[in-house]
Image (cartoon, rainbow, N blue to C red; front, side, top):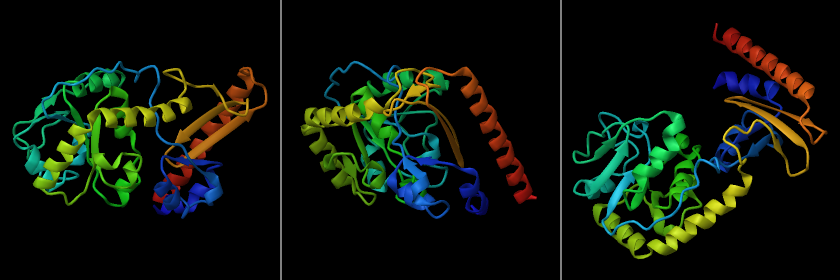
Length: 275
């Protein structure tokens, strides 16, 4: 924290984050004019799946990782939601949570296989669940899991918080939800399933235009017609704009060297600060 506060404004020409809450938080370290909100996106080519209707069973796929719970608490799971899910068909990818005995666990996969595995597992269910605890850290997170749910064509039920501000009111689950309220929320979402699917695709289609149409987009044309190469790091984002709209190998090489030098300087300052 102190390292970011001391060096972020010096080292960063531009800082990017994924939502307005995090932008407000980062403004403590750098001038707000340096901060740009870029909503999280998915690779268009790897996350474009054909839609097909689910079966009628009320089955659920939890989209989060095991980092959302621990060995002693429910973590991001609302207690009322856990009570509701205990006798339902639920699946997860990764590690079985201790508080759901009947949950089906799909194995881990490599990151390159994640989109296909996520879609394959999620499409076996009717609803996708995304819970985030309503705290400072949670509000800084992006809505990526909601967007992934939109891409695979399953209705997402998510925490009622700023992170998922784009979600339809019928999709939001309060953190203090009771089992009875959870039953009502699921029934209402189920009764309006087609409407919510259309709503999600509308959200997704607004997000697609910002996506590069390549799995590894090192270069892309900006809306201003310039060629942009952007390097992003946890506390540093360095952008080099080149006037030529055709790839300039020399300019790319120079920008790469400059960026690496900036990273080296950042590391040296960090080590000096830690020592």
